[in-house]
Image (cartoon, rainbow, N blue to C red):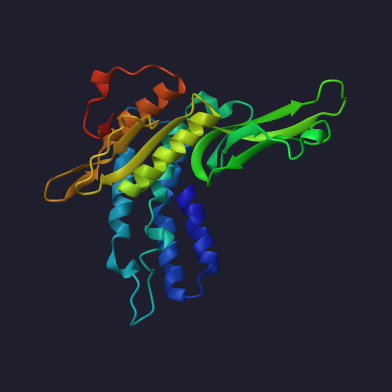
Length: 273
């Protein structure tokens, strides 16, 4: 699990005994979430995932985990324990049944993908001597990626040049709150991914939508946005909704199969299309 792994990393660096105790508490609370990864889901899987996740989020909101300057216990607000990494674990739970994960060269993890792939030799006179395939790397992101090996040789030469390239199959952008900045960065990422791999997909998964921000997917390469909590004009929100988890699961499956969605089915709470 992504979140458990991150807590272990924090625990190894932590010297405060009280904070170490808090981290062990959180790891114990995550045990029930870890067990879900080992189970075969029935019809109630979305309800179970949302219940366990909502319980964990509620426990994490306990003020004792917040940094106290007087006791020097607790964690600062920018600590990873208050991040949305648990959303990545939800995405994995929904993805683990997909057959594509068993394909050769497929990796699901946070990693960079390659883009702006082109032939660009340093010296026109020495094209036959050098590997002239160039590409840039995007920042690491949660994604299903396809590792490929590109080999080529100049006509009349025996030597082959080999390049390992990472293609973004499906990228996930997750955060607690969808802000304009996060959305704009996702627009850039989706465009880069499409330029590299035309069938690349990008889905944004957030708990809430920033007040007053109403994103539109028009003229972007983003495939879907999922807001997991129903919100009210008072800025209050409900727990993570199992129905929206179900819609997310179905959307992921259809995108991987490259099925064209029925727009009428997608116009439901939690999906922006």
